[in-house]
Image (tube, rainbow, N blue to C red):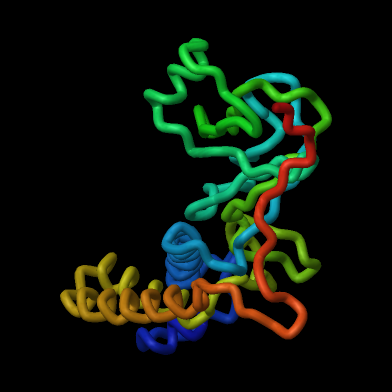
Length: 229
């Protein structure tokens, strides 16, 4: 990625990047990681979606759910499910509703409500321990090592990204030219933005459930308990 960016910028291609004493290599290395972090946050890329499944604690704050070290954010319009009872939690609850719930002004019924507070998942009413809770997040790990270890940044020349490499090159080109005071960077930045928009739009898919010969509908949530009159 760095060598291709160097070629497009009319620079000599560095033989190595990570750990190089060459100033151009050092600049490209910094820009590559800067671009990767930006692209990770730009869109909910399917390649970065991670399924989270954890066992509930008997507390409001589920400290073992969201890991700020590896999880960047919840996916857009996330659904959080109690897989044990096959129910979807309601949320994110707005602040005013959460205050009423937490102060007992209104009583939350099954399955309950959720809200992120301090980058931790909170659920009311308080769950009993041992329930399986599931949801999806966007991972901070946008690259991996040659051995398959997920990483939040490039740290070796053999690392590879989960994202489109051409986007990296386009991002690095305008960032390099801006850092050097070249007015042309604005045009390069616009080119990168258009390409990101196109790939992000394609990455979202059609947004509809396709009917096959065996699946005719998406099953609705069900309640496995007993309904009393």
